[in-house]
Structures are given as structure tokens and as C-alpha cells.
Length: 225
Image 1 (tube, rainbow, N blue to C red):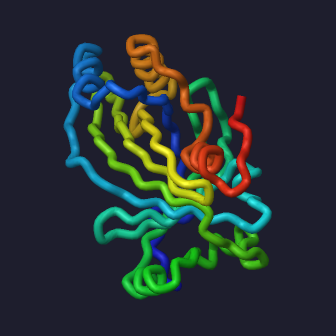
Image 2: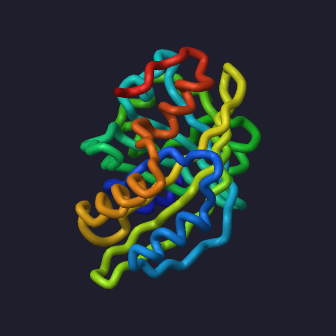
């Protein structure tokens, strides 16, 4: 397998996650961050489909890890996310390993819909001795913008319109994510706290994988407290 790793040793993802109520749109969010003194550059809205995999015993789910293949346009990206290293309120911090599927792997994926995992990850996480199967599909319409502050702070703000599809049907879900790209954790927390307070938002206390499995998974799980 000729996997194209973005970072062979993974990267640390730090983001704030908030539940977005019906009626709150992306332009209103941008208006608020503008009043907070941030400049921003919007991206074209996009649609992406995530297929999540797990073992028959739901090893990844129970360990708070996740394995997915994401399709966005013509690109297919695999990702393995370890259990959250630290969680402080709305802030999640975890290691993530990503790879790009080659043209041949995309062909195999479209024909067989099986998890295509680089050997380095198979060895690192001992997947070679476990059967992996698709357990959840997450379809997301994403609106996103890059926020910049005068002090060098940079983050990606996104509003996701999500549909979970699983054994128990489908469920609509809306979420706001703010991913730290450059700057300090305290700066990210200040932005998240300001948005949470201004719009009276509830924290999203679980990953999308756990949220989706809680709503539509074959074996329901209890949300984290």
C-alpha cells in the first residue's frame, strides 16, 4: 500500500465543540466573531461523507477512538483518532493520523467498501488481528471560515449540518467546531466561552462518532457526563 501520510507520527488536534441550535445560522456566528475583533475569510460550503469502522466488539467506540474514511469531492482521506488526551469543558485534544487514498485504493474502496488502512497503522494499533466493519455513516454540510486575530491567533470556525445514518435509522444534528490552527489554548477557550455565553450554547461533550452511535448505532451507548 502506498499511503500518502500528512504526518507519519500524527498531529495533535485541539478544538472546541458546541451544539448548534436550530435558528442559529453561520452569518450570525460570523457577525459575532467580527464584533469580537477577528478578521475572517470564508471558504466555499462543502459536503463530505464519513464512513466509520469498528470491530464486532466495538473496541474503538469503547476506547473513545475512531477510524473513518472521508470523501470530499474526488478526495478520499483516512483518519485514525486516538482517545482524547485532555478534555476541558468544550475543548477536545487528541492525536490524529491521516492518510490519502491512492487512485487504486479509491477504486477498491468504491467496489468493496472495506477499511483501507496503511500497514504502519495496522502494526501500531494491532488491527491486523481484528475484523473491521462499517458501523456508521455521517453526512455533513459544512460552512467554514478562518479566523485571525491581531496577536497571531488563528482558528477554523465551522458550522456542520450533520445526518447520522446507522442501524437504527437516521438523525439530524448541528454542531459548531472551532479548531486551533495557531496560538494558545487559552485563546481558543476565550473564543469558545464567548460564543457559548452569547448564544447560550450547550457543549458537545462527545465526538461525532460517539454522538452518531448513541443516536443510531446498533447497540446504543450512554452519552458521556
